[in-house]
Image 1 (cartoon, helix red, strand yellow):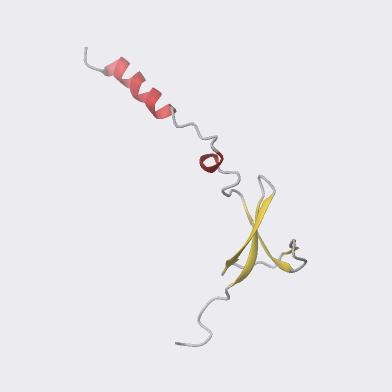
Image 2 (cartoon, rainbow, N blue to C red; image 1 turned 90 degrees about the vertical axis):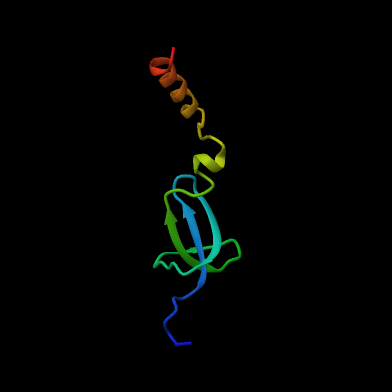
Length: 81
């Protein structure tokens, strides 16, 4: 295996900007910003716009009934009589 060709794999904090939720995980993503985590250590901070904590699909706030309504509306307008 060649030396020095792999990215640095380290612990990183990802912070969801929309819900102020943060989690610690391992990643090759890096950042110049750091944050002090709950364990007292400083880790690189990667800011994300959306995560499972704020995404409508994972929070249960996604409206999935719109497709059924659109089909009924289409069938009512153009369906066979």
